[in-house]
Image 1 (spheres, one colour):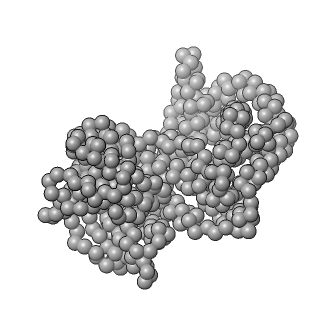
Image 2 (cartoon, rainbow, N blue to C red; image 1 turned 45 degrees about the horizontal axis):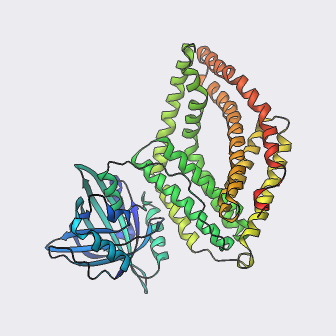
Image 3 (cartoon, rainbow, N blue to C red; image 1 turned 90 degrees about the vertical axis):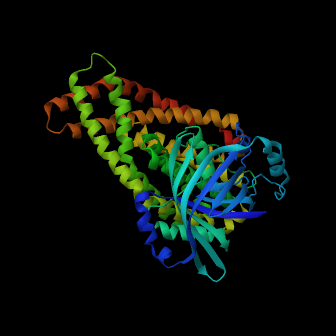
Length: 501
């Protein structure tokens, strides 16, 4: 059995020439002649191998025909470590060399039902990079197509494969390449892409999943798991946004960046304060670049769409809506430019490389994670109560600060959820989320009214429409404002789920 350690990066076809001109490519040894590789992937009609996270393919390279079996692998920041078994293919499948009993059993069970399900064909150029004496990395540039069920999808990838050295060397090389070329980490294998194409499934926005931490983790270990989970969410949605400009991908990127910033502050006692400050600023700036489009989407859906649905709404509101749509189109073009810039992938790869290299401090080696979590949650609850007291006067800026404080507490509870009673935490967090949603509506109304007046400019017609929208939401906003502070007080008083364990 061999072990494949590789890091996969995607890039737009328009960046191919730029990539090949990169000094790390031009200065590398050409490890092999450029070749066209045609691979046929096999599975049962019910995709039993895919369900078991096993892939089987044959690959034609010149006159050679190889059989390759690959096992399950976790992939993060484009980096994967997976078992593989490769041998010459002589016309029938032979799995005798597969020495993993579980994988071998799956293959033997389904060998008679295997059939071709999709094909990849791409041109590969291979270079060897030797960053130091005891490290050797292959750089493989692939350009071609995946074909399945009469549909095709482009392949435009760089695979960095470890011949000798450490996985950290792959991250360092990827970060260096991405500084100048718009590369983005890709966790999805060609096999997984082929299956999506076979079923005609588009990429879907990835939302935050359950917390990955474990009760036995140290604070630093827990932070690593959480930060990597946030990175994977960000990267998956960045890849989705590159293929489909649906606004939900961008929204989930911003959510992942907020979660990263919350995690950095939450675990700051176990980290370097300067490192936390630097990356908090980086992620804040990245989120701000994407914020305008999301803000306009929310404004449109929350404030204008409900009025447009009313048949008695004045025509002037539709004219104002057209101005909002024009502003949204401009903002989305800006987002697209940001997503295509090298900074997007470089930021994520640089953070992943530094995350992998973090070392523990004295606090981390002696701290109990549950005790650490309780202290941090108590601090965030007290800060939220302080914000609540300041917001009692109804000032919109203080209400917004309270909303942010509640959001940080909610993220922290989600991160630490494996440590405490789940049902109690879930009920508590649901109340926080509801209060946060109400505060968000008040902020949307305030910001939206201001923005609409700006878009209306000197037009009396549009100014009148903006005033109509503000008036339409005025009664609802007043009711929400009256209810939300008592609602929050009820949540922040009394016992807390993390103190019941």
